[in-house]
Image (tube, rainbow, N blue to C red; front, side, top):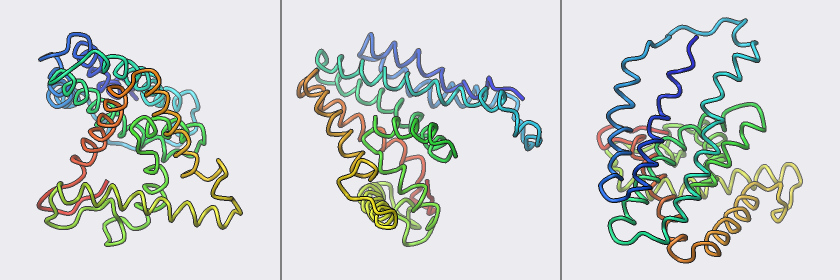
Length: 256
């Protein structure tokens, strides 16, 4: 079993760093690598279509090896976002927009995909890593709604994360953003009621997410002012937009 193909997405990192450092047209390097070189690299690798053996499934060393591409992404994403906040104070006009777009694609198209894998893990440590990634894109309620709502109601009218047949992205996106948040609140309130958790307790995930996000935006405002907050917020929006655009179609109903 070869773990190297799972590191292919890391090819976007040099492109992103170059775009962030040089700015301007260099910001186009990220989509070029993400949509051209990464798929080509994946196409050139050998795909193992078989299931792992029972011995492989129990091999802790092998499990850790194949989890490394996921674990290593967390500090990279946090570091990139922090640097982006710093750069936002020095960028203007289209250079500022390019910074948002390139970092947003990195933290959304790839970061949310990695978070999605982590929040499905059994380990609370790994689910926590997934929460860190989702908090960095201002979308932590995904951790609640996706696992306990979407997978229960997938492709039904009760699922805000499933697009309707013939629904465009522009209709689907606002509906899924608002609907997923309301669904997550209902799900977590129901869990809190069953377990006797007060809404103001940090054990209530929606409350905890709100506190952490408020602290994050406050820290960004304190360090980088309005440009930093604008970057952080719009980059988070673009991240979710990039993620959603890959899970819906204007001709067929799809889900995350």
